[in-house]
Every structure is written in structure tokens, then in C-alpha cells.
Length: 487
Ligand SMILES: [Zn+2]
Image 1: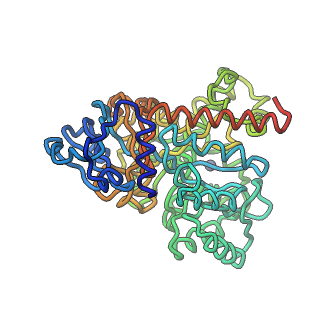
Image 2: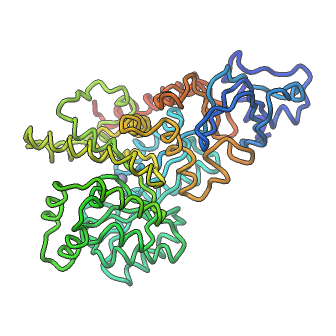
Image 3: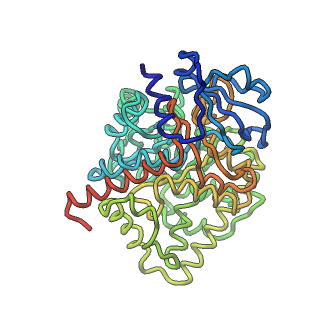
């Protein structure tokens, strides 16, 4: 029964594109879909493959076939790709679901991810862990519409950290108890940040998480070097801004001075603002590649802040999906930047450009790059879902090729999570999480902004169906606004 519902949806959503055979073998009709007349994008090779068809059964790709064999499948339900570009759907490898008062506000955005072609997100922790775990199971069970969720649950921090919802630890015993709690939650990876967590315990947390078989993603504390973290087993560095430290010959001395208390964190941050050596940094990136440490650059957040003063966000289309309670949080960073001088803004912009410039060097060094938006209520004008498209455009401006960029948002994410056998490219036995794009993403990555069709969870969503998801999100936002008496 379930399978009939699946492709019955196809027939309702697609007008004219799908052809139903006259006398169909019913089991084939119900279970299978042949996608033909496509230009298949091989993301791993970074090239187009012509004259192929994709056979999808029960939500999985069961074969990639030569187009010449189409007559063999004439009794099967077919979808004409109209010569469009077929790519694996996108993964956003750094998002946050946060805000104790924003559960419904975040929930309404889950289908919006699908409308933007994003079928998997890596939640890098927030203060809604139990809710996110529920969403993860509901989505996996087909009871809620949204992207597949990989979550860190709660992140590790030191005592009295700045952030809400952390697992605060002050010693080994806390660390082990925290690991136990996260294991109970069945988190998909471990996240660590550096606000108050002490360097030694920070390194111990990485080692312990790896010992227990988890991937570990993290910021970089000033009291430890990037090499120390890499050698402790770090799996991914979040935010390329930290990597600039690799361009300083005295990184180890600074870290030691912070650790033994002869230098403050603030002085260390100030030190890292001048004297960056690109050659030294490249040498550091080669070390990261050798140690198999991935990097999620998250450029868009820094970019939005650096150009905040000169950008009018008041008419941004995406605001139709965000409640005022959600965007209220934007004021936190805006307020912190309020007194910034022109010189400070210029410095912020230069810093942003220097960080962006590192991407081609990282790619050349062989570092696994992950596309992640860092979208979160607390991250000003980093809009959920849309920010991933923005991030990819920034990767292109930074000098990565469209093929390299496409990998960061597809196969690289799956590879990082260790699920590349099931996701991330168009091949037999992988999930049929697919997008049809009218324009060639290997020429311009902005092609991902225009999605004609999404295939996900055994269902086909044409443009009309995707627009319907967006419209429902806007309506839901309006309902919440009315209910709360806000404007
Ligand atoms: Zn983040």
C-alpha cells in the first residue's frame, strides 16, 4: 500500500512530465520509476555523463542504465527529465536548531530545507537536543517532512559557558558522564567549543570521543595548537577563520602562554590579527590533510557581519518564513557591532577576504571540505536553507571550481559521516535523493538555486509541489505571528 501512495503522489504532482503505460505490470508501476532524458552529473569525477537513465525503486537507486535500453522498461512509470541536470541532493554540514521558545519556528523550516534541495543536515548542537532527536526519528520514519538529521545533541563546553544548552564539564569525571549521556541520546557525532573549556580537558575530550568511536567536530581553543587537536584525533574543524593561526610561526608559543596564564585569550586573538604567512598556512593545510581533518569553512556568517552596514536586509525574501521571535536573536550580534568604526569594519572585511582566499589552498592540499551554512537563530542573516546556496556562491567567489564546490555539498558530507555507500552521488544502491536543475551546476554553482524537481523519500516533488511547501511555511509563520500577537 505504502508504495502506491508514494508514486500516486508523483502522478498528482507532475502534470505532463510523467507518462503512465497503458497496460502496466502493476508491481512495477507501484514500485518503480525510470528517470530518463537527463544529463547525469558525476560529482566525484566532476563531469556530465550523457545517455543514461536512473532506475528508482522504493526510494533507492537500483540501477544507472544506458538510455538505449529504454524500450525494455516501457511498462514502467517514467519521468522525463527534459534534458535537465541530475545531481545528488544537497547536504548542509553545519546548522543549529536553537531557541527554547523557537521550537515551532524551527519546525516550520524543516520542509523549507527540502524546497531548497537540502535533504540532509548536520546539527552542530543547540539548546533543543530532545526536540531535534524526536525530529530525527520522525523524519527517518516518514512521519515528518524534513531533511535527514545528523545531530551532535548537546556540545561539550567548560563550566559556565556563554552558550545555553551545553554539556558543561570541569574534569575527567564530568567528561565520562557527558559521553555516557550522549551515547544514551545516540548522537551522530561529538561537538566541542572553546568558550570556557580548558585546553587539557579539551584535548582529552577529543581523545575520549574518538576512543569511543565518535567523529569529533570542534572549534579551536587559543590554548592549544591546531596540530595538537589534529593529533588528538579531531575529525573536523568548524569555521575556516581558526585556520589562519596556521600562518603564524609562534602558534605553539602563544598556545603555551595562554595555557600557563602568561597571556590572556584577548591578547592571543589580537596577536593573530597581523603577520599571517600564507606559505606557512599551506604547510599547515598539508598537515591537516595527512591527519584526515576535514574543514567546514562557514563563510556566510562572517560575510554577513563584515558587510552588515552596507546591506539592506529589510526586504529579504526569506523573512517570510522567519518569525519575529526568531529574528529578534539577530540583535545580539548587531548590538555587539554597533560601535564599530569604519576602520574596524574595513579590517573585518579584509579578514573575511583572507579567510575566503584560503579555500583553494585547502582544496589543493587535499583537505576534505564540507559545505555548511552555520544557519541558526543566533547567526544574524544566516537564513536556514538559503544560506547553504549563499555559502556555495561564496566558495565560487573564493576560487573553487563548481565541481569542487558540488562535492563539498554532496559526496564529501556523506564521506565525512561514513555513509558514502548510501548517499552523496548517483549510483546503484544509494538513496534516490536527487535534484533536477535546468542549468548546469558544473558551469556555475548558482544553478542549485533553481530547482525544477526534487526526488526524496520515494516521492517526486515538482516545482509546484516545492513552492507549495514554501507557501505552507509562510502560512505557518503568519499563524504563529498572529497567535503571539506580534507583527
Ligand atoms: Zn555553528
